Amino acid sequence: MMGWKFNWGRGYTILKSNKIMKRIGALFFMVWVANMGLAQPTAVSEFEMEQLYQEVKTPYKYGLVLTPQQKGDLMDCPSVYRDGKKWYMTYIVFDGEGYETWLAESTNLLEWKVLGKQMSKEEGDKWDSKQRAGYNALIDIKWGGNYKLHTYDGKYWMSYFGGASVGYEPEPLAIGMAYTAEKPVKPMEWQRLDKPVLTSKDEDVRWWENRHKLFKSYVVEDKKRNTGHRFIMYYNAVGDSLENNKPTRWYERIGMAVSDDMKTWKRYLQEPVVHHPVGITGDPMIQRINNTWVMFYFGAFWKDREGAFNRFAASKDLIHWTDWQGDNLIDSSEDFDSQYAHKSFVIKYKGVVYHYYCAVDKAGNRGIALATSKDKGKSKLKFELK
Image 1 (cartoon, rainbow, N blue to C red):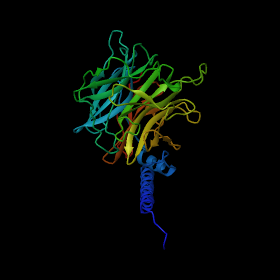
Image 2 (cartoon, rainbow, N blue to C red; image 1 turned 120 degrees about the vertical axis):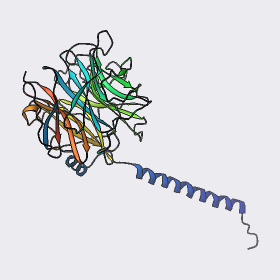
Image 3 (tube, one colour; image 1 turned 180 degrees about the vertical axis):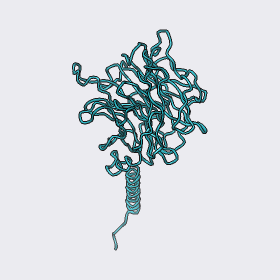
Image 4 (cartoon, rainbow, N blue to C red; image 1 turned 135 degrees about the horizontal axis):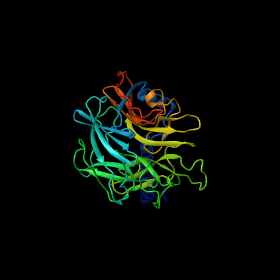
């Protein structure tokens, strides 16, 4: 042992370094495990899609619940919410010149009474003076929940598409935001932001929305900030990247925009989130069923399906959507919806699924109809013949 010396300082340093490296390694492992636990699959399984279909299907058509007050008017796009013991439906009416937004009420979800207008056309040169088609924002979207309207910044909100020209969906159409501090349980004119929040002339406009028509929008709050922002708007628009491709240039697809204040919106993702090679994919609305988000939408004029019909897609993160491949949720089967049965608003209340939709008969009459998951009898309401 004589002549041998141990360098205590160096040995201690090595021992300490090894302990630090082990701790760092353990920390990285813990972070990796945590991320793996938090990570969610971007696709919804075939099994879960089938479960969702069984949950939301509504095989019983109750019939018409609202029809136009004036012959020739066209009713469309229901949005349903609840306040106290009453239910309210926002819907739009085309009166031959442009769209306006209306309100109705019900105590049983079957019989509805028209209350009056919420956004009316007006004279003048405002960007939205002749078209104001509104859709309530921030409806509570828990499946089987209370369906109350939530507020932001002390206001109720409504997104809408607007335009300055007379006619049926004339170019250009853009998306605006309306608001009110009053509880929307009676007819009243909502206030509107001075300028649209999304247009086809914006610098960040995408290829799928560049044909000057932005249509229905639906705004939800994303509490988990999956996009990094508080609010998400889903909307459908007309567009095509091919300049002279007439067969496809009018197709509609659903995309996303995001906001943190309901006033300033920017596009999210370059591509649409739900779309099909041919025809229309439009009019999104959202429900959350357990841990899965479900987007109800309508399709029309697809290669493999005739007419117009309602379908759904599902997501775990509000960004990546898995499209249902099975049967339509709603399609034409009755005299009152013999031409088109499309444009969903779907809720569940006291164990019953209520699927409101736009029904169009062979004569072109257009009203709001209802299908349910349990037999509720038959509506006596009919279209007046043109």
